[in-house]
Image (tube, rainbow, N blue to C red):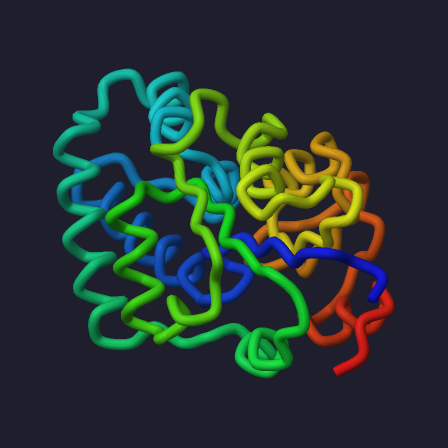
Length: 210
């Protein structure tokens, strides 16, 4: 096997939450009297909540962020509880399990595990690294270094699947091999070893047979 472990981002990589987050987020900003465009929303993709709050505060200092977060959170949770689809190829890739696997996400612990249970993906993973487990979130390498440590493998023997530039940078800086499958935001490929249109294409490009 070319790798000892597979590490996956969650939102936008395995589950189609980023589209829902973008739509409900734009609705929340508008409801608070501060409409934003998709370009602004894409700056929030793949980052943790404190970082997102900093971006929002710098651009819209008069915005009531607590009100925004409450509106956005309620709309987002209602949407994913009704329907949370998997990304194409996710189930096939996870089901062909040949090595340890981990989730590495910028979501909070409760939120991440809720999404995994909703989709039934929780059964596939040996460990789940969330925002609560690290002091330096993506794009710092810490989340991926922790996942590799928990699985007992070297970072250089880990294949990572990410969608965002932030996540790909984190995995690359950790010394992992990175497959980037872009979702709602643009991808430069700067931080990835393989830039792929789908998860399965990325797996094949990295030398994993299905």
